[in-house]
Image (cartoon, rainbow, N blue to C red; front, side, top):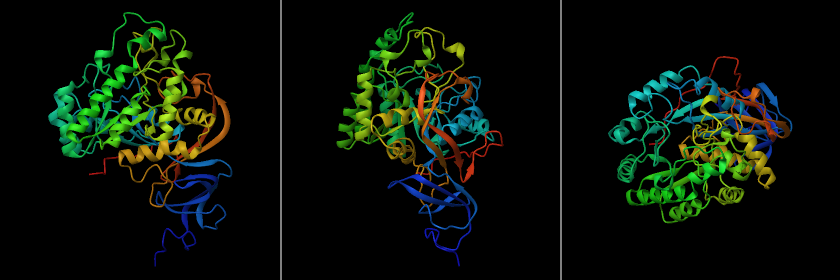
Length: 450
């Protein structure tokens, strides 16, 4: 007779039991024991419950979080592996408590805009990932007829730009193409994730050594007008859409209003928009450059308000690394991307704790809601039936970011020498502690939601 796996007192000898006095569960933070068998969570009970297990890990006062889910990561392999690759990106993810990531379709060569390119991407990732990895497909003007085949091949949805992407092989959609893609997305019941900036509001600068000059070339109106266009296309077609890396807080009201009207829309923001402010970016410090740009301190406060009241749904990294030679000290010339997949949790927690948020809030923003958004039903929560993916976190530890401690390929970061509170102690994938010196054990994921 097989015992009920939800009964913590059942006479089962589990593979593993992890105990923590600060386990973050869907119903809040409390002392708990988590029993694991075959890589899955089979029971959750009290901290002092007597449970037979082959291995026991007692974390004491260290916090036990579900592994984070980062749905916005640019790995760049194949083709631009000198920027970043699956081994280095997933080592960095594991060091940051991330156990699942979804790779963006651009910056690799070929971009993931058809099923053949997806097969190339999967082959490049095979045997190299320390965490579980899924893939977004790309929606570009020449690839609209390929979207159904990409969907059938298991991508988690489609990414598009409404402004130039920064790489020639991934051009943006004009309004007509955006509408057509939304029609296809609605027919497939898929999701379209959008880099929403309106090129009519963007301007070029021959040289922009100061951050203020760069910021002026990408005003908030570029985001708000593009978000309005995405909302209109989604409303007209019934497509499910998602706004990537929201930096302009005023757009959150339009997103919330559209949602109340029945538009199927969600939005994310990123650690750099929540932790950094334009007033404090040094001139020539292009490690701070990203698109959309970091905005004002007042805007940062408004983003926090929108995140806490649900107008913004969750937080993901937009990890977009590049070699140092693509970050010259000129904001006009430098690559626009911030590498942060390893640092997202402590960066967000440092600021969240200062603002009175809790670990449960951070877990909702960085694990539970991204997992639900992507249809990853076995990720992002410590519940019976989920994968035994965990981040062990010391929320009180204070430390300084040192470039030499970063695992992504090029240790370029705006957080260098920054004091943070909260450190990832270890990361577990399907009940096993991730060891980045051992063979990778991450799996490739396909969309399961139909």
